Structure formats: C-alpha cells, structure tokens
Length: 466
Image (cartoon, rainbow, N blue to C red; front, side, top):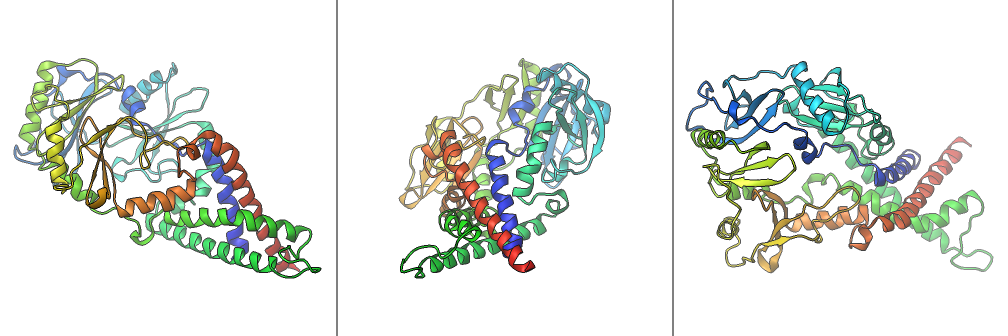
C-alpha cells in the first residue's frame, strides 16, 4: 500500500502545485452572454403554434439569439426541455453544425479572433466535458483558429456554448486537475465508481499517513549513542524520516480533507437546499403568464439584451434581463423594471422559517468566511446575506438581482467549509488566501509533502526488490 498510494500521494501533491496556477477550464456565464447577439424582439414572440397547455407550470425559460434567429428554451413540469424558434413557434429538434458554427463565430469575435471557426465534428463526451450536463449532449466542437488554440463546445440540444479550453489549459490540466481529481474520462463518466475510488484511495492514504507519523515519532524517541529524540537513521532513510515528521502532518491534512471533498456518505451535507429553493420561488407560473411576459417584452423591444431568464420569487413571475455588457435587471410580469425590495426579502425570511429569529438581510460588498476569493475561484459580490436560526447558526446567501438562493450554510455546510476547504486549501483567514501566502508557504509545503511520499515509495520499492 505504501508503494502504490505513496506514488499517488506524490502525484497529488505535484498536481496540486499545478492547480494553484491553472484551474480546470470552465466557461464563465459572463463570457458566454457577452458573446451573444442582442435579442431581436421584432422576431419574437409568435408562439401560437407552441403546443403547451395554458395552465402548464413552467419550471424555467430563457430567450436568446441563436445564429440569425431568436429562440426560446422552456421546460414545463413533467415534460422535457424544448428549444423553440420564437419567430415561428416550431420546435427545433437539433441544432445543426452550420447553426452551431454561427455561435462559435460570434464567440470568436468576442475574443478578438477574426478567422472562421473550423468544425472538429461532434463529441458525446471527452476529458473537458466529462462531468457536464447530460441533457446538453452531444456537442459540436470547433477550433477557433487563434494563437491560443482555443476550442469551443456548443450543445446540439440547446445551442448554448457550454465549454471553452485553450492549448495551455489542456496541457497543464493533464498535469494538474486530471491526476489530482483522478479524473480520466473512462473513470469519471461513471460518477458512482469514481466517487468510490476517491473515497477509498483517500482513506488508505489517510491510514498510511497516520501510521507513518506514528512510526516516525516512535523511532525518534529511541536512544542512539546516549542521545534521546534523535533520528536513528542516516542517508536516504534520514531524508524520509525527518521531513516526514514535519511535512507528514500536512500530507495527512491534505489527504484527509481530500477524502472529505466528495462528502462521503453525506457526512457534511447541507440540509434542505431543495426545500428552501422551493420556498423562495413559490409556485411556478403558468405558461399563459410566461406568454404574457414575452409579449410585453416584444412590444417594448428593449435594446441590447443578450439573455432573458426566469426569476420566480414568492410565487410571482419575474425575469432577469442580462445586457451584453453584463448588467442585470429584474423585470416584472409586465416587462417593467422591478428591483428586489425590502418587503419581499422580509417575506422571504419568513418563508425560510426564520420567524422569531429574523435578522435583516445585508448587502455584502466584501468577503466573509463563507463567500471569499481563493486562487482563481472568485467570491460572488455583491450578495445578500441573512443569519437565522438559534444563535444565528444558519446563513443564507441570495442573488441581489433575482433573489435566487446561491448558498446555505448550516452545520453540515460549516463542517465542509472548515474541515475540507480550510484544511485542503489552508484558507482559514484572509491573509492565508493571498497569492503571497500561497507562493511562499503552500508551495514549499506541497514540495515537502512530495518529498516524503516519493521517498517512502522508493524505500518500499527498494526493500521489496532486495
């Protein structure tokens, strides 16, 4: 076990160094919407041909441009999502490669690339989309032809751009996220199996780290030439023993918190997220109400809106209009601007069960212990926060524009934040989240843990092959 897991732990530490500087690729929503054309409201919304019952409950909807036409993505309760041509009301069964190419072309322009994207065919699943949503598959893959060798994935189901990578990201992630998360496609495409592999390799690593530290302390306490608390080893063994006493604790911390990262057996699971989300949004609107909102938008024809998305709150129909510059506005059922107000937030607090322990919602513009920037993962700001429950033990975070529940911190959430994130990233305080700390402390610690794991594996190989 020491040989096999020792090598794996050395790989974990070295790939952790890479991940400090190159995260796993993802397509930011701001980048995606910024690449869209403004919605042409003149072509919206002739929906008489849409076969949806007027009283059907709508769980989500979105209006955006897809190539030269305006489309409506809509999902009703008990039915699969549909992509609809908003100018004709016809259902689009599949987004063709030429139409996906228009999405890729606009994305190229937004990056300042003037060339024409080249289709690389259709992809069901690969290393960079292995954990993506199944309902968006398969994807049209395009090479954008820029100096960074950027590739874009466009869903053949929804027509949305869903992932973007460049050559440098792909190279470094093969040395970073892929080995660190044990993330090869052949394994990760089976979530249950992948989760069990992570759980049990981490548990074995935790066991080996504990026994290694115990043996190191026991050997240190032996008498040697009349000296107590001195290493009995020389040479290569000494360079495993002494660094192991120092860096072994960090190796134990990282492998143990890595085990917690997949929340094994629900040990630190936040309770009631789905119920709280439902309590905030209330009953879903009927299709007839959504139709009325879309008709109002088409009559007003507001300029420069790239995306219109549902924002149900308190049983009422609202929508969030996202402009191409990234600004967002909440609109009511008549299409008029309607910012989230104090009375709505007070009612929302009661719906969340905070009666008798209500604290006012705060609009945070600075980070706190649970919403913070570390590495490339940026805090969501501004954000609404409310503390509730006995001793203010539960914290709710809401999007200040839509009112959507972004996060909930209860006993399980707090345990996950400190036992996983705190131990794994050493991000307990704001100074520990700075790049200076990560460069000048985390880097030596990771290299020291690599030394311990690799020398331990080598000593095991040497002993085994004698």
